[in-house]
Length: 341
Ligand code: TRP
Image (cartoon, rainbow, N blue to C red; front, top):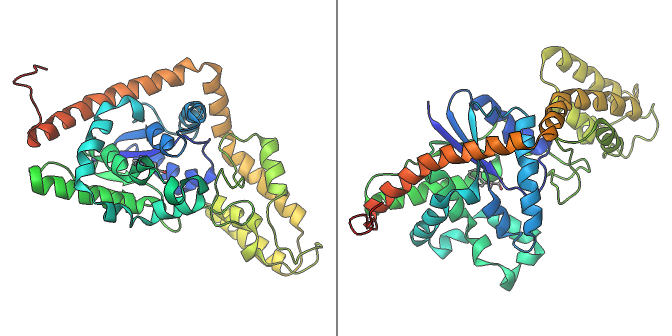
């Protein structure tokens, strides 16, 4: 049994891209390992510092989404990042162990800067540029050995390993070099509009909290084969988002056969897009129904999820406080002989 640390930025409700990209994996892994999931509000602030209310509101959304989709509070500690002082403190110590050149080579951060105009050029902040250091502190403050994430997070884990190694070389062997676990196949889910990434900012996402009506409306306006205008036109399922999601949601063997049939019928001009959309709506609504119901139940008395967050955070602090103290001793900044703790 190992220790897992992973997390999400609370910048919006979670969508099925998050689910298939990493939540599903975490739900399976939580039974095997000691698990902590971080609602990374400090990291969310690095590019939303001017909209703190958004981050605050989404702490609750992400908490409810976690519980809705099967994160079990008896197995997983759900943790609020800003309430773990060890993370902020370690971030400062780790910032000495990383060069500017190393940070500027992070492909995920580069991509994000490209997408976010308010971070371009001279507007790039020290906080955003350096958030991978803080993410390393997230992981190392727990001395986690496993980090289940989507593919885009691999550069962060690599940096975390480097920081751990550097710390260990200078101050003495202490931090574990964690391993990332990425779901099999591609962990990135495409958007309803055919964009290669499902994302809130692109407005092309199906959310875990979507109502059946919202799901239907989204699926009916999803990108399909533009050459297939009538039911009897030969279609190209490979470029069709409705077929793509059907494949994504198809797990068991019976449905696999059906999937192949749908593929052939579409290609042969034997089935129309409306039928496909109706069927997909049913599949997605049924799949998300237990999540939806659990979420509604949790929303009824918000003090229950809040208590879960409080307990998870308290347990996390027991772990991280100890790790911080030990790391500081190695760094010779434990002045406990002067300032009794
Ligand atoms: N950077 C991650 C994301 O954008 C969220 C995150 C914050 C995280 N801290 C973490 C992921 C620690 C894994 C481990 O999705």
